[in-house]
Image (cartoon, helix red, strand yellow):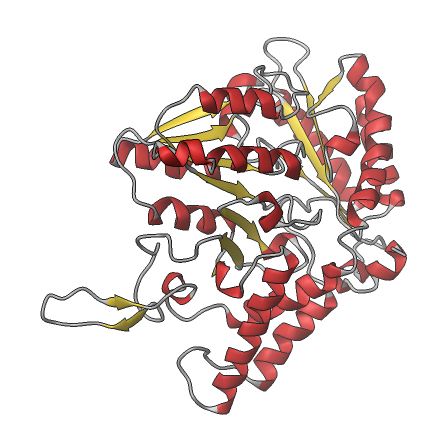
Length: 434
């Protein structure tokens, strides 16, 4: 049975104090805290076999090779990939998405379909390719509206796909870092079934589906085979692992024409007579240069740590979210603030984001309220995020630049008491504006 008090013992950072108080860390959508098992693995690498994999034949190098293979295998099992070679190591979700975008062959007029509240990492490279090659990006809203409480409507989305020609890629965040709204695995499967349907293949109009899984993989069980997705990107630093390590899952790992970076570690042979280099097969052809060996090895420890907890994490996070949401709802109903995403916390997973709007045209709540909140939070040792969370067009153009936007994001080691502390702090500030 999931016991948060036992879980917290595995996170040394939570045992620290500042001004006689423990930390209250509610910025997990940005990065999570590494567990002791991850820290021990990184230390073990540094202390016992600090060497290079893939190129060194001595016993330290062979040990690194063996441990990297075990890590790749563990991550494949965690998301139910059919083979470890489908797991490509990158620096983070952003690099994983760029690896696919830059590695595919594009032609002028090819269309990429995204959602309207995507992270900038699932936005800017498509705009770059539009400028460089002439591809087009089509933005589809969640349900046909700009409502702050919109949920993903798969029928609306499929209708937009069927009305669009020349689609090459659908690229979606499976869970939003803005408000936690997520797409059900069954709805992803419906999109993939259409993308890979025989009718589209016969017309040479079938397309790829890529998921930004950064906010989903750490929080809910994932089965890439059941969804039949072509690509999925996620970050180990959002699942109790080290920073600087991401994963790109590829259903067909040899499908990309080029790597994001080439050079050492990606080639079998090179020539000085004009012939093209001979590249290795996946996954190595995508992993150029000396890798983050300590991080890769620690990634195995991270997924092992989560394996027996992943089924229980959603219910635990939902309870934490319920405490905060129930406290904020009266302010939402009185129009003191707006809760973003579905009002039911069960549909927002681990995230509770709200906006406080200016009371008059000249007031800049984005500056004033955030300064007030951050000063108060410092007294609680409470950490969370403020801003537009890299979802610039929706937040700035649709919701307004003078809005104060706060995001609390929960994980398996957060407690109900921490949620209540957050409520206590925000109530003191919000009651002055009610």
